[in-house]
Length: 317
Image (cartoon, rainbow, N blue to C red; front, side, top):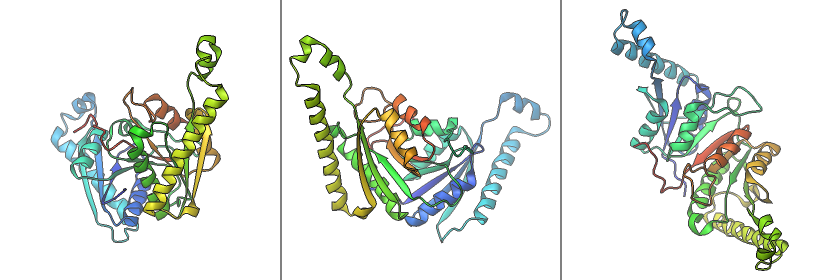
């Protein structure tokens, strides 16, 4: 079950930081959670260090950059409604994504909220830092895009249910997070699954293999029934935990390639937030893996919240 006690708002010079602060603070207020606004001054080049060496010490230059970022963050906070949320501001120097993940782990934050750098209404652009967070953070990462103070109206969660034996718990974690956010925002929740039987056409075109299998229609029908049954189990689970009003949830299943069908679904239905699992480790079935996740993310235009299984061990400690 999703429990939010601390929200880390990630601040850098690549993003719309006012949007990140507003979204993160609003989310924290909905969950009565503490907020850590964490700003990171990125490492500068050796050439810049050489150019300033005769004018100012490197330590002083670094301190000035950190202090300046802190002042800018505090100025942004003045213009935001805090709703009594407990807020702390910290700034540091280093590789942004590493510092964000390390701080989130150290402070036991439940989610990292960061704005995208996109100004394009039809595309969500990820910075290098965004991609590193999506790939490597064991903590959920919410990359925010949109006009300031836009209220969430439609949330979609993508679930893979064909590998249910190994990943049922993760599907429940994804569904819990999405339902929690949708419920707090009075938004509609769409639960989406796409499935495809890779290699079915090869089997059915081979005389030696075809005789060993049922007809293609029978195989497809059986798989579709399995997916529908798994969705029904998740419906029962969601109802049991009363995470969201049933009338605010719709369930969608497609026999299609997820890389194409899911972005189309999100864009066609004007989704405001996508919740999905990502795992940058080849060979584990049942998740959006590596290139699949990145293909999907490159095609969507709304905010995204990516999650890893609770047992995921990230490369940053």
